[in-house]
Image (cartoon, rainbow, N blue to C red):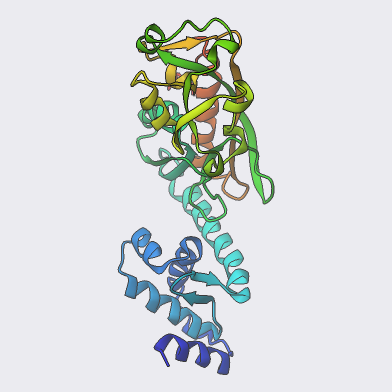
Length: 330
């Protein structure tokens, strides 16, 4: 019998909690393990080693007299029913402490703290990264993490505090708003166009090759626009990354539908059939309802809305240069 199995049996035998033995700091370890589902992942986020995390979680289970996780090598640390119940309370406690600290600690002082922003990959790298770099001119005491990734970011697991997504949150206690519309068009290099037959209509696209998404690995249906925009398009070069598609197109061997905010500022790329092949999508800004009232979250939220509003023409491909929020008033 392993030590883990013995611990699970002991928990089942003695389920009476000893609240006097609870170390409240252990709740931080529990929270990170619940969010990452891995002791190793929690250890990395907390800046400690794996054994410390495992020991602190076990101490909390001993104090509560119940198993909080079902542990396996393949599945990681999965919350039990009791763990799920505790997670709701501890998560609320964390938000309350953050709010209290902010309200008391920032009285009469500049905003400070940490905000993590999750985003789709292209928008995060090509738009949010430069905009958020400027944000810190006005709020140098707020540290910002930007996660531009080709998949969904979980707000419920606190992978991010604010998320920019292609779709509205479907369920949960979230605050969300439409951030902006943006436009995509078909692009190619001048070298590609010079080396291939002229493209004067959609019919002329037959026989051309395209860079696109991998259909069954695209994280949102909103990304599968090639077949709808160019029926019958042949794609022999595919990737889960729009940035990879962008760089592949720059090699002059394929066409690709790319966001205008990525391609329009690049003089090496030329729009193809700009009046016929136009795809319009939207980004949504969302946040957990209990975090939205935090002042540092509000500062980033309002800044991103102002940045998107001030760049409507750029995001729609009607301008090649990005605009900047007036830091003094924004």
